Each structure stands twice: as structure tokens, then as C-alpha cells.
Amino acid sequence: MTTFTTVFVILFFIFILQTVWLFISELAGKDLDLLMIIKFLAFSMPRIVPLVLPLSILLSSIMTFGNLAENYEFAAMKSSGISLQRAMRSLTVFIVLLSIVAFFFSNNVIPYAEYKFINFRKNIAQVKPALAIAEGQFNDVGFYNIKVNKKSGAEGNILTGITIHKKSKIGDGSKTVIKAKNGELISSEESSILQLVLNKGYYYEDIVPKKYEDRSKMPFAKSSFKKQIINIDLSELNKVDVNDESVANTNTMLTVNELNYTLDSLNKNMKTDIITFTENSNARIGFPEKKKSVQAAKKSKPLPDDILSLYTNQQKSDILKIASSNVISTSYSIDSSKTELFNKQKNINRHLLAFYDKFVIVYACFLMFFIGAPLGAIIRKGGLGLPIVFAVFIFITFHFINTFGKRIAQENGMTPFMGAWLSSFILTPLAILLTYRATNDIGLINMDVILAPFQKVIKKIFPSQN
Image (cartoon, rainbow, N blue to C red; front, side, top):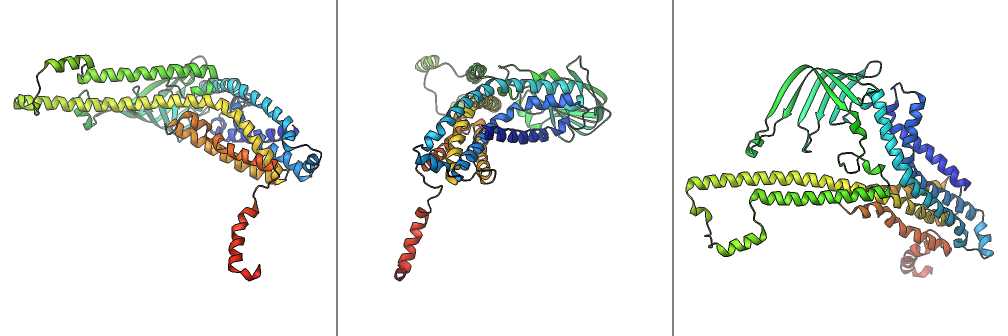
């Protein structure tokens, strides 16, 4: 217990430093008082626990059982009739209780902390508008992506070299780009509206013609201005509507029950969109219903192989133009709907991954214990030397496979269930193998098995030396 607590505190402190490094650009030089910085870090700390807890269990298990094996206490226990399984029994009960606590923490504390974290960042942005925009990179602020070359002024609200991409409401890319020589951020605590005053600039906007054949010309409108004011609603940064798919990372703020409800709504919404798109496509093309088409086929006369031969040249030309326009329109509609449905499926996948993650951490606690405990008994080394090497290697493997699986699952490369549980499925055989070898007093690597083929070859080459 003492070893686990010590390891957990040390690793937690290390990961906190990593969090500070990730958000240093938002904290440094912003005139924030100590209390605001502490709150900022406190709301971001719970997300660290799913990383620190399994690693702490793994390292402390290796250290504890490594110390027992190194001091020959296992030998004394076995001579007294106490097996490794019996020695692990009390700690297994502790891991069970710890896993239950980890589940409730992941299901309740982390979503609440994520909600408070985004709220707090939004509130800071209102009091300190410079926090909403960082230098030298595009910042996602409401319906805009904003990049500035330099910030100055007492509160960093004087901007120089401004580039703004306005997001398209229909999700087909940026249609408006605004550039300005300089500008100023204006906000107040009473309002959630952040004003961006732009000076000496211009903007251009892509125009989408109604005729699809004219879209290949890519027309756009360009204009200049001396002063322009953009109002940005910061409340959009913190809108937590479980049915709104435009809000990023909403899945991290939901409990298991809320995720179930949200997933049900998202799946129904996607099915409705697919049915609506199919019906609209049939109506656009003029494709009749199945029953009507069968009846019409029975009543109508057979058509010739060359249907266009029934029309004049002018009619043929008009028909081909209409057909070409319909094909282009349908193709554009399919591409647009395909992108929209793909994004909705990615959103569903993210929610499913968040749902499975709450159970993966429970299993990860067991997995790391049944890897660490037998591994410590096998290597017979305690302390902070060799155990750290093994623990870090195993945990990096676990974390890499976990991240890799989630990324593939988000892009529909595999099911979200498989993506979330991939690392656990891969490392479970290792836990079983190590437990078996430790229980039967077999070393980590059986050198006799490895060297036996080489010994046979040497005996054949040098038979006189046998």
C-alpha cells in the first residue's frame, strides 16, 4: 500500500508537469493570479488518472514482488506451503476495490472536471481575451479560425498580422478568408461576446453558383475595408448539448448513462439522414416506387435499344444536357452527403470509445497487476532500477497500442469496441504467460530451450568433442 501510494504520487506529479507544459502557452505571460492557475490545473488533473493508475499498479507490483523474491521471502513462503496465488490473494482484493473506485472516478469525476475545465477556459477568455488566441497558430474560436503574427498591449489584446478563416455552415470547407494589418480584442465580464476590431484589410469569399456546370470556374468576390468589427459568441465554446454534433469532445463530459442516451439519439439521427437522402435522390432522379414501376412495365410497350432515336437532334441535345446536369448534381450531392455521414460516424465512434474507456480502465488495473506481480517474482529485482525499465516498456506498449487502436477506430478502420480493447486483448496473453511461469518457478526466458538447437549443431560438427 505504501509503495503504491508513493509511486502514484510521484508519477502523478510527473504527469502534472506534462500538463503544465501542454498549456504553458495559455498560462504564461497572461497576468493570471495564482488562484486562477491552480484552478486551471486542478480541473485538468482528473484526466491524468487513467494514465497514472495502471502504470502505478504495474510498477508497484513489480517492485513489491521483486523485493520479496530478491530477499528470498518467496522461497520461505513456499517452504511453508504458501503459493504465489495465495500471496497475491489479498492484493487481488485490493485491486478489485481500486478498480471499482477507478470506474466511478472515470464515470463521474472526470466528466465533471472536463465540463468545469472548458467552462473555466471560456471564463478566462472573457476576462482575458488574449487567452482565446495564441500567436503563430490557427485558433478555433467559435465559427472562426484565427491566426495572428504578434500580440502586444497590456493584456495582449492588440493584434498584428491577422488571418481569419470563417467556417462554412454546411461543412464543405472555408468559404470566406479575411486578412487585416492589425486589430484589437474587446470583451467584458458581463457579456459572452468577444469583439474583434479589424483595421486596414480585405476579405474574399468563394461564390457557389446555382448551376453546377459553372462551379468549375471557381468565382469569388473580393473587397477591402478600413475598419470591420466581428462579434464572436464565446458561449459557443462551452455549449454542452448531448444531441449537438458540432460540439467537439462532448463525449468526454458524459457518464455511461448519458453516453447511452446520446448514442441512441446519434444513431437514430444518422439513420434518418440516410433514409432522407435516399428518398431525395430518388425524387431528384425521378425514380418511381417499386410497385408503380412494375405496373408501368406491364402496361407500357417495349422500348427500342436506342431510345434517343425517338427524338429530334435538338431534343437529343436538350436531353443530354439535362442528364449531364443531373449527373453532376447527384454526384455533388453524394459527395457532400458522404462527407457529412462520415463526420457523423466519426462522432458516434468517439462517443463509443468514451463509453468503452470507462470499462477499459477497470480491466487495465487487473491486467497491470497480473503482469507486474509475476514479473517481479521472476526477475527477482526490487527498488527503482530494473522494475522501472520493465514497467515503462510495458506501459508504453500498452499506451501506444491503445492510442493506435482508437485512431483507427475513429476513422472506421475497425470497430470502436476493438479499438478501445485492442491493447488489453494483446497484453492479456502476456499476463497469463507470466502468471503461469511464476507459479511454476520457470524463469522469464528458458535458456535451455534456446540453446538446445545450437548444441545439437555443435555436436554434429565436432562429434569427437562429445
